[in-house]
Amino acid sequence: QVQLVESGGGLVQAGGSLRLSCKASGFILRINVIGWYRQAPGKQREMVATITSGGSTNYTDSVKGRFTISRDSSKNTVYLQMNSLKSEDTAVYYCNADFQNAWGSRLVDWGQGTQVTVSS
Picture 1 (cartoon, rainbow, N blue to C red):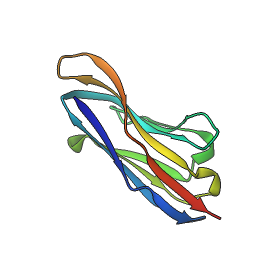
Picture 2: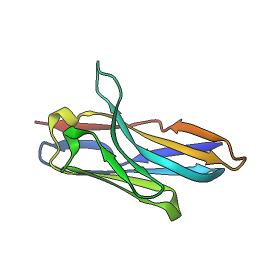
Picture 3: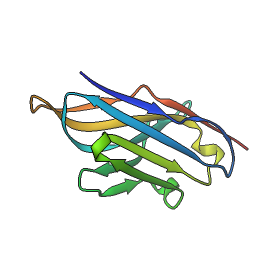
Picture 4: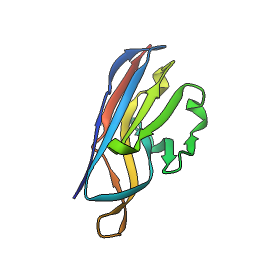
């Protein structure tokens, strides 16, 4: 059993900052890729940022220069530092992990989501 638990969402004014955290726990042998996705009302879920086990990062164009993804592998935790927030960043943010469990199976799992609301 693997769990992804997000925290750090909330309400912030435009131009402000928030930091999201996602901790993975359970029978995890290795996390290959971990990252953040978001879904705004009436829209499809989209990738925001991902980071590989080797530290390579990928961002959607709309957040480049404003958001930074990082990970602490020793804690199986990924962070998303969000600066210069805009109203269009309002969404439920989900943690996603591509990992190998203790039995060597490669799986993908999602967290429960955390709401980020940016007021203009």
